Image (cartoon, rainbow over all chains, first blue to last red; front, top):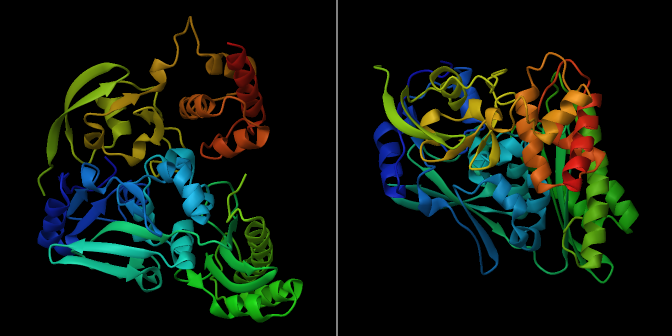
Length: 295
Length: 160
């Protein structure tokens, strides 16, 4: 058998799950979709004392729009998000980006919260969370804690979650009128981790860009929001020039690592090119009032 | 640590099985070693190659990335349920006719991926076919004949 020996619990309530986390502390790992954790177990890179499988906690299976937030419970599969018409309408950036996560067979098990908690810096959904300013809800036996996406991601595969905390929900702000969003990525093959990916948003009034968001995956130890590039997109003069200025900021300021898949220099080049394309796409979508709905 | 195990009921291809398995044993290994359904192949065991693709409640999943205990109470479908030697599934027939396989190791996973894909998308473009096949590695064919087989299968299945 590939995985090492572990104790296995599949509680049916959040209370039981967080009690187990409190009892085992750092020896416990939460098993949701398993698409990142089980490979690590099979390779024996992870050797937890116990697994707390949350797949039988039905209370975490909800995908609802509430006020100006889309609430995604910890059991919601990426495939469910991809298929849900309300996600395409309310948070089109999330709907567009989730299709880049792995393959359909991965997305039918993988969860949105699992991908966030795994915190791979080349993964798509953490960049989306940072771009949109998502709120992440952690639960422990001591109670609830809400974290902003930017403070949640600490380092590669490391989040601000404490060992006794379970990420129970990700809250994404619904796209406000006037905004357009786009997600673009370059990877070696469909479904691979991004060599570089960008989530871009612009708020357009008339034909003027008055606000912008730019966040990157594969460009540093955590998903990076680049405020200098955002400012350049807003204050950089005529739109064509502003886009060029934002792309230049991305090329200059991002500090991606080089590896066998791509050099740091190539990743910076991709960041600049993708910034240009994503800003233009987001602008078009904002102008057409489609927010970011893709074909 | 003592090896923890559990007795579970698995519903595989419409049949209920009761098995006692170590909790760390993957669904792929239980299908092959305990239920002797060796059509499901095990390649990389880290979710990359797709050879172990089965359906869980009708959705394609990697059976190497699931513990068998997690499948308790769910319905599992393996390649053995697709067709018979006398009555191949249209996708199997198309793979045969178009030489969509050479060594055949990856084929069960590809069939389970493709049949589920065509159910959701009966008229796929060539790009969409290539996109979905990116989740299954074949080291023999170069994919050309696999893509042709999927296109032909889609046409036949639309015609009924």
